[in-house]
Image 1 (cartoon, one colour):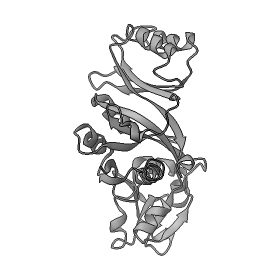
Image 2 (cartoon, one colour):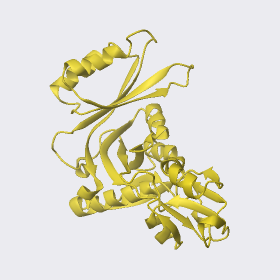
Image 3 (cartoon, one colour):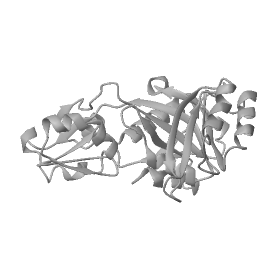
Image 4 (cartoon, rainbow, N blue to C red):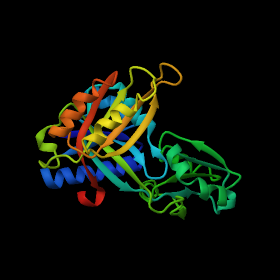
Length: 291
């Protein structure tokens, strides 16, 4: 059987790059064949897994400069059957791609909102008067560049090679230590043949809503983990979309959900939350470990 993996397209996105590394690792280590299935949005790639159209999805969840990818978090909260199986960390180096003869000829720059934000300082310094237009992905606008010679796009050097387009500037992200964390997501428990390792998982991600907005409501869940010595590596709030001022909370914990301490913490957590979802227990790997 060929494994189908959904990801944000068109070809050349950073998500596709992370997916390619993961597929190469699967083939080399497990002998598993896989095909890439690009989708126009992150949400659509996750829905493809939920609806059985793909076996796995690779989705960005957090960037070291711009923080969380909210579409990923919001969609995972909505889809009850999805589980995180693995986290991948990919270094991000942005380039300015254009058929313009020089920077001063550029009038419009396209890219994904995350990429635009990661290059905001560079754009203000070198292209202060251009029109900035957000797109669904870093590669969505690349096919129009040959016809529109006053436009540019921010994407990877790999994308420029795939589309045979010139690079006007490289390494334009404002901070050199720029990386993005991706989650590999499946519907329910993944087949044992696709698991990276049999060792205990290092991280657990969960999300919950609160029964009421009262003083100390969030403190009680946090105290549970603090008292048990479980480190909280990330917390993020998102609107419930029910009422202004109501929030969901997403947490990453440095612990295996199957450990006794975590089981105890999760049992106690249910008493202080309205809805609690365990998004997955998984290991985090840098891309270099998959090559």
